[in-house]
Image 1 (cartoon, rainbow, N blue to C red):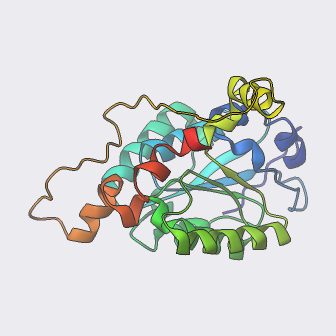
Image 2 (cartoon, rainbow, N blue to C red):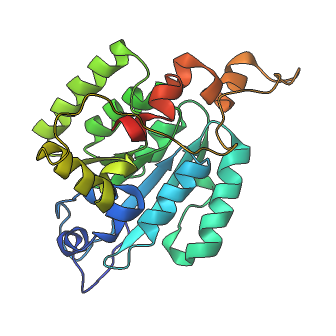
Length: 258
């Protein structure tokens, strides 16, 4: 999809003034060059993973007022996740959400179909279980897309090596990647880290981090419904499975570790 739009704000100017995204979802790291000709400065976004976190990340992106940005494609394994996400975003953001049925994709290959709707230099938001992150990232690099990916980005040593190699490739292609590690966008935590690094507390011999966490995304699971396939059950309840989430330290405590 390509929508011609004349605007007083160019793609470059939009990202230069997109600091509001930093506090919201770390998307400020996704600085997009003006790669399209003519008057079309529209930045198109595809959302891959339409649960609560993905919907929130898309809302953060669409809340930026400094430039022309539009959500044009959505993808999820589960239709009952995509549908409510679309309705919520459409009701809140109106014309900034342009995702008709033909650009709402369901299934394990939906991520490709959603990214195929974008042009080089557009943004893909990844908010699926992290087991799929490197696969989606590899395709985004192939398509020349900038990326915002939720944490955690890997689940084990093998996929960590894959992500590091892909990150190097993205740098070589001058693609921008933001990661949803919120702690590094906290001014208070940044100041604390600076004071520790400056030696104001002396030699640190012990540190302890705490996380206050509600029932949402809890790693304990519910029994599998008898009519649901095992794989879909594990993907839906991914916090409960090491292969899908990486476990509680990378899944939940990564903000404190970071």
